[in-house]
Length: 91
Image (cartoon, rainbow, N blue to C red):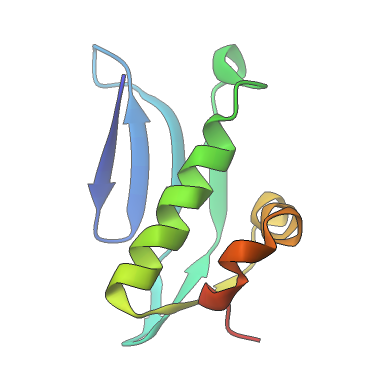
């Protein structure tokens, strides 16, 4: 399994290129994204995959000097539990 970073998405694929997990964060404007969707296949739940997706997203947003609004309920919970990444949030 390998994480693949695209412009507004980080995805985990299996060997047959089926999506096993993903987080999407489309641009709202040049400096802001909306973290709007986090998905992990049932077979991988409970293994920290969603947390890793959001950690990678936060690091990518830092790298791009972008901020995030959040409409995904899991992402809201994750950022509450990981305050060290709140610098990427736009309030």
